[in-house]
Structures are given as structure tokens and as C-alpha cells.
Length: 76
Length: 76
Image 1 (cartoon, helix red, strand yellow):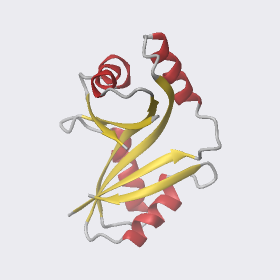
Image 2: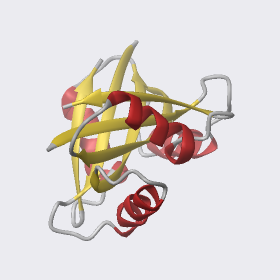
Image 3: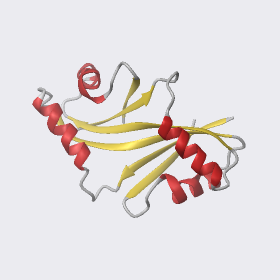
């Protein structure tokens, strides 16, 4: 069985308000070295058999919103 | 400026209901090779200066809930 990780992130040009909130909270806690934070999703899939093409299809159809998100596939 | 990725995942013993839902939806879409899906968070931090110890502290204080989640830190 193959383990595949899909990383879904907001496109860099878009404001990540959750990330901005986390960055602000950490700075208030005293972590002044923090410049920015962005939050994405990591989806770990167990597939058998593995086909990169099919995992890409899953991302396009359901896992990511191609209008606002990018994704990256990594086979473990 | 250092880029650090923090991966926050639910502890393996816990039921990931969002992941279960995603897995069910993909199977219904015809991806019968999918056995399981689990969903976690990826938090990308920009820090300057970088200290792994400090990033660990951020995770313990704010980014992860140590009761139900594990985290992993990766410097890019």
C-alpha cells in the first residue's frame, strides 16, 4: 500500500487570514522573530495500487479548489 | 529569513472524521484504490532568526494541541 501526501496551499497572491491571525497571536506571545505564517492542508492518502495520474485527478476533483489553491503531491 | 514547515496531524489512535468523509467521497467518485485518508495542517512560518527550540515552543503553546495532535518541524 502506498502512502501519498497531498499538500494544499492557498495561492501566494491571496491573503491567508487564518495565517495572519496565527502570526499575530504568536507575535503577541513574544515570538517577535516570526515574520509571516500561512496555513495549508496536508492530506495523507493510502492507495493501492498507486497512480500519480489518479491522485492528481482526485486533487482536481475534490481535494483542492484550483481557483484559489495550489497542490503538491509527494509519495512517501 | 528561514522558512519552516510545521505539520500537525491528529494522533493515529484517534478517529479522523473529516478524513473518513473525504475517503468516502472519493470512493463514491470511483477511486476504489483509496483505502484511507487523514487530514492534517501544514503551517508555513517565516522566521528570522531561526531557532528550532523556539519553533517547538510555538507548537506547544499555540499551533498544536498536544492532547490530540502530533507535530513535526521541517526546515526548508
